[in-house]
Image 1 (cartoon, rainbow, N blue to C red):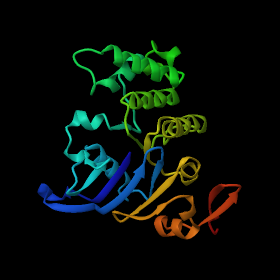
Image 2: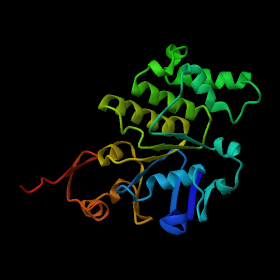
Image 3: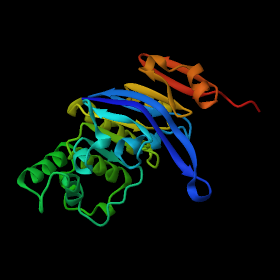
Length: 261
């Protein structure tokens, strides 16, 4: 599977009577393959969340295309697009459902009036694969933040997507639950061959899990590639802060330089 975003442009309408256009994405281009974890990086307002909303069909671009294996998903029916792309939001509100029923909602684009045998088998398999079977009858409302995020990932994966999207998935989690979510993102890519696209703020977290990095600024991808592209100069260009990059083995650590007092 190849995700190919071509010349994507999007503007918000703002001002009195919404007659003023505010460009956010300006002819943006991006490619990502199956089994890769792509990380969107950039300052607040760079367009990361807007890009994800355009891919998901939540927002409609002014121009451009979002192709999966050559098919423009922007022209698909919502149900068909849901079979290709799934989404794990930052803020999760399942309502008072059991874990089993919550994960089953991920099969809505496949099922008829009621779940089929294949729908039930898909849910049971993902619960087993992600070690959630013991929680199947528990109310999601009574689970921890990390468990809820893991269930959101299970619900997304049970759609059998080709592209899995995360928008700041660990922003409100402690370090142990952040590690849990990171592990599931990596497993989705490596074991299931899903292309994963995530928007992150934490550069060091990005370095741990990312394969390809897309630095956004002023509505464009200004630099993209593997870890080899990440430099002190690039981070200062994109974020406007001075950092020090240290390496140990194949791992880079990014440290913000001490503030002069």
